[in-house]
Image (cartoon, rainbow, N blue to C red):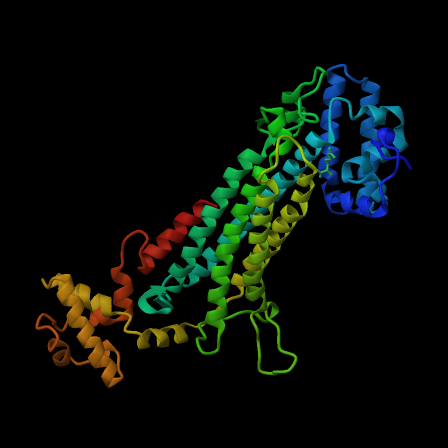
Length: 456
Ligand code: ARG
């Protein structure tokens, strides 16, 4: 069977080269976008009198059948026809004859593929946006249940100050909200129409690009034909935004793994997200967070791959760009699956407030509160810091918490200490005192949740 471009060639390509240069086995998933793009192009050609209305009607009919065949799994994808574009075009010609041969008028696979990827990625971004918002909603629900549940906040992975578990979760909500913003912003640059650029220089036919753009829901056209067919910066941006989501999810994963460790025991994950060991009967391993942490690597790799793919390419289209698809698809697939699982997983987190409280009792988490207390009584902060450091040393030697020292013992470190000090040393008092927007006071956490829910 002759290749679509074989007229000028004296010998056929070898089987190895055929396989090496083909993309049909991974780009066939863009078939719905390819058909959509072709229909918009054909409609415009007919409107402009470049092809006959009857041809357009035949193309619509043929494409409807092809779409049905693909959906039913009966469409035969053929390696000889290289990619999704030529496979569909060939089938169209088999179904409707000459009208099918007219479809490619004023178009090239170069602007066709760039259009297909943008349509595909736009759908991907929209799914991701929905999933991010589902995940945020799930986090907010758990945060609302634990707006007042004390846990140790950490710096350097050591107990630092009390926070609430709800407040801790809201930190991730903020990260994910910025992730959403990045995708919304990226979508603006994805949603521009390359079609009409043809191979690289535009076309001699009187096309109407604005019409095609509006048919396909693009915000505008790509303004320069050379740029339209060649740059994949929008895909790189997408992978960068996806990489940052994976950074955030890997941080969250790391915490889930740590919290679930029997030595910490702050939470338990539902059994359906964990697996056992084939040899150690006691194990319940946090496989899902570990895998999410690991899968961040492949997403960062795809970002690096696409940057390297694009770097140094001369204008305009080069076959290098065919390599953009697998990393892009895998990035979107990985992110979509991970977000789906996480929204479900956080809902099933079983929080263990007693373990969090026990950890708080061991880390002198209210030492800063004691220093602030002394400052409010008139001591300069540096002196207060020193006095409290000595108190912590004494408590450490005695093996007790600051709150377990007696009033007279505390007064040894500063005469400014009064019997109101114990309210300050309590976890509840410490939390309630951080009462400003962005602080961990339970009423502030609850107010933040209410505010954040209105943004979804
Ligand atoms: N399969 C190709 C790709 O993914 C389509 C464009 C081919 N264009 C060309 N001039 N060979 O980039």
